[in-house]
Image (spheres, rainbow, N blue to C red):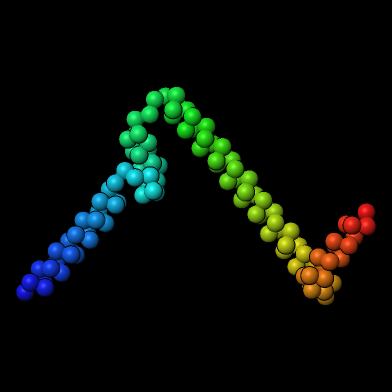
Length: 106
């Protein structure tokens, strides 16, 4: 009987812990605009600090967009090389070697 109570207590504690994590105002747990807004309000920042935070977030967003665009361009370039290698019936490495040779001759 005590093992049932211990098990029930353990399950209840885990449930409570899970609820606390979901209900917390921790930024790591924030998954939507409302939760993030609640967290930022809990910081009680002045307007000046909020403007600095906004500027920082905007810069990080632009940086992330730039990185994603670069990755997309690289993937597109790789795909074009793969298609060219198939068209010419050469390996990917052979196409790269030819491209390298032609670019060094210029």
